[in-house]
Every structure is written in C-alpha cells, then in structure tokens.
Length: 132
Image 1 (cartoon, helix red, strand yellow):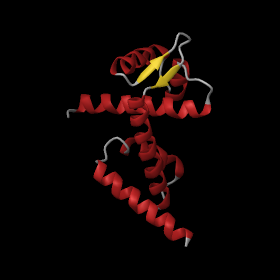
Image 2: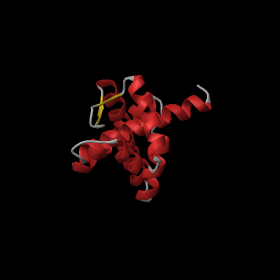
Image 3: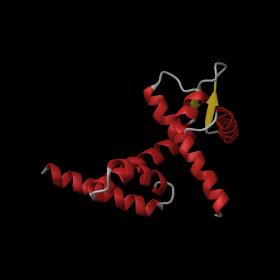
C-alpha cells in the first residue's frame, strides 16, 4: 500500500471513529458535528461523508443525520478499541495522557492484527493481575 492509500484509509477510519464517538454523546450526528470534532471545514466533511456513503460505511437520512452501516460500525469499533487500549498501554508505561492519546491516534492505524492481539492480551493480563 502506498502512502496516499494509507493516508486515505487512515482518514476513513478517523471519520468513522469520530462518528461512533459522537453517536454515543449526541442524540444524532450531523456533518457539522464531525467537522467540529475533527477540526475540518464543513465543505471538507461534506466531501468525506459523500465518499463514506459511496463506500457503504454510512447512511444519511433526509435531515442530514449520519448513521454507521454494519460495516462502518465494525471498522469504527475496531479503531476505537485500538485507540483505547493503546492509550491505556502508553499511560501505563508513564506517557502523559494527552501525548498517549495523540500517539495512540497515529499508532492505531498501523498495527497488524497480530500485534494488536498481543497488546490486548498483555493489557488484559495486567488488568487481571492488578485485580488479584
């Protein structure tokens, strides 16, 4: 995969993750909410939402409310889980929370499934050990 394809996939994943997180906080998600969350212009978000619709990751109703499709939700959930666990790992080894969250956002897109599974297993073992 070349750099352009990688950055494109990373953006798609970030948008889907943002929609998922916003849907947990708001009664409905609109393009303007995603723009505010991601810090982009509404025009850029409109293009991105059109692309996500064309890819089958989101749907929009007549009021402009955004909904993740099953496939979109699956990707968003995977990225969100990666973000949470990587942030937790980085903070556990002493990284400041703000930096850990920023770094996790970069790392979450690049890990292989095998590496993420190992990190997840390690975190779960540490949490279990801490409860004993």
